[in-house]
Length: 361
Ligand SMILES: Nc1ncnc2c1ncn2[C@@H]1O[C@H](COP(=O)(O)OP(=O)(O)OP(=O)(O)O)[C@@H](O)[C@H]1O
Image 1: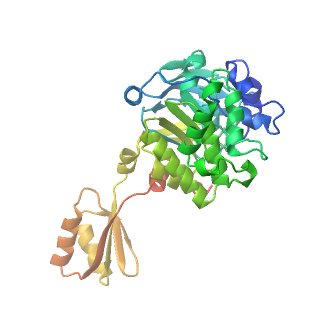
Image 2: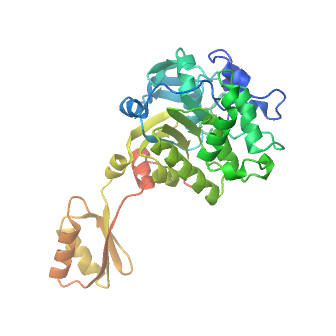
Image 3: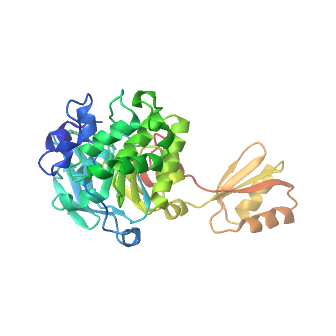
């Protein structure tokens, strides 16, 4: 991931917390800076109010890097409050750059954005206390325990009350399911546990919005499941979660809403169900009488017919599956099986972009 210019631009638009975030002398100081710290005590917005207004809005948001590379091109994004919003796109499609602009780490070259109703970057000081973010990998001291690492993060937050640190750290660890591993050294944590600790650091104070950049990148299936289930739990508590990913199947499993990026441009956005409904389902008929079945489907007006050894598939369109079944039986076709095949997000993505998707990363 290219971050050179972002790092150079991190200081000016951000208020103090970015610099105060990383404990002095941290071995991975630069990585740690990318995690937005806990900055203030508590949120003033209730979950109910967040669920009404959009959590993020961008208007014509554009980033052209020096050298002419347009990483984000005229982006108009609306992230509904209360959603788990999947920001989906292949590597290099502009997801991280968008997130960095939202967090004030990179200055847009065009357009603008709002988080929780405040303009960014001008209103960042007011809004950052309500926003937790994990951008790029977690960076912690390997020889310290999970708990001690979180205490260090908390100590770097000038607005955090040191008298309540124990409670807040314990609550954050419990929240991510690391209560029992609080006393374990970070280096003994699995990758999934490390990522959950990073999320705990972002949740040291209550948040209305949590931004996660590729949170399951590099995790094994178990770690991926853990993080996915944690994200769902956090959303169920009323926090809007904005999560970037290049993994279609993952987004499909955990997100309520979706924005699809391709080469810096947004090619589609909306509720997941609506995006999936853009593509008509197909029907699969299992039978030994393939030619006869295909003819029946053709006469019903079904298109996109494909025949196999002992099956026929076709676009169902608006025809009801029970009508297909009745027509087949009426024509004397012995039907072994009939199934409606729902489109996958991958198929929808290919329809939208005309290109394949790097499903496995
Ligand atoms: N600081 C920079 N200077 C120049 N080009 C950059 C910079 N940062 C990102 N880019 C380019 O902008 C494009 C979008 O990158 P970005 O990191 O936002 O994509 P992404 O979707 O997050 O993918 P990845 O997960 O691989 O980072 C890429 O072509 C990348 O090379």
